[in-house]
Length: 181
Ligand SMILES: [Zn+2]
Ligand SMILES: [Zn+2]
Image 1 (cartoon, helix red, strand yellow):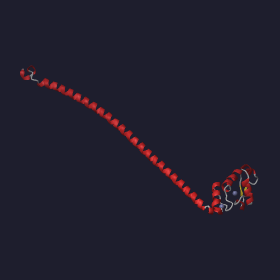
Image 2: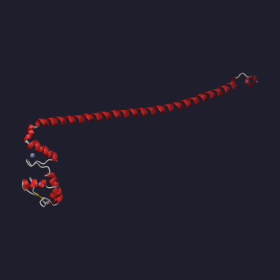
Image 3: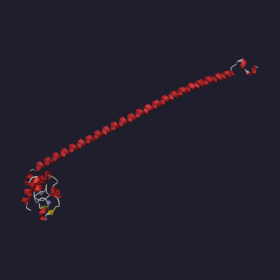
Image 4: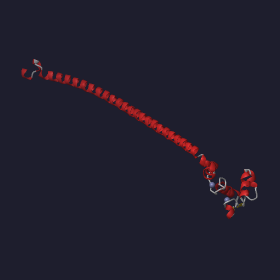
């Protein structure tokens, strides 16, 4: 089929194209027109059409992923005016680069912020764990204090008892002295 046919198909709305009798089973659009492709279903053809013909450059038959890129391709490759605009193009690329730099700066800032927050969290955790340890140590020390007080009291009582015993044994009380009898 001719280039004209292709143009006509492009001009048809989505619905009309689906209902067009030539669309269903054979792809006769360039470059398929060299050897028309057969499709078993409308959906298979639609998929083929979307993939191979929706954004095809009619100048060089290149197929582009989307309309924007197709337009860019046509402008860059086939538009002689574009050469005159290359200065502008460079300006655009410079601006794009600046945007890219700004984006990576922002990314760096985000990473720095994240690192700062991570450090703060770690510090908080360290302090929290540290203060927990301190509390445990204090509790331990308190128990130790209590124990040593009890021990001291016990020792004091013990020595008092021992003293009593010793006093009882060695006190120079005549009536209790063995030699006195
Ligand atoms: Zn095709
Ligand atoms: Zn092209």
